[in-house]
Length: 133
Image 1 (cartoon, one colour):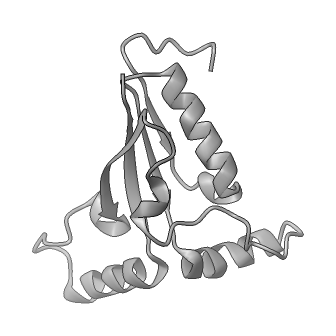
Image 2 (cartoon, helix red, strand yellow):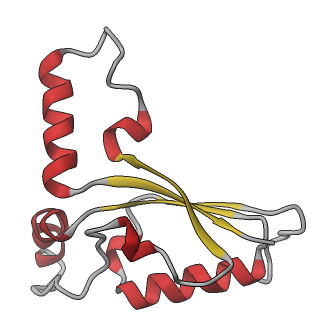
């Protein structure tokens, strides 16, 4: 972090990364980033317990890890709040809506349905945290 010039803030993206850490590790990293980069932002995706168990279990089993229960997941947006007075959850969008609008008439109804179903079952979201100055 010392090598990053954050004098004007900084934007960090962690797409598909935080699932491999524990909640405590993610929280500690986020709080440290907020201290080092006031005015910065962190954008990352999350899944709920069901999503973590289904999506991660197969991936990690191939790596010799059988227990995913301690890995980072978010059941409720409140799980991302109260980490530090310098960290604020600014926005939270469903995963598929975070990339493009499902209201686009070029997107077929079945794709809208499947995207919504996946988002609801797996509790998939894109989150943006802001670091207070």
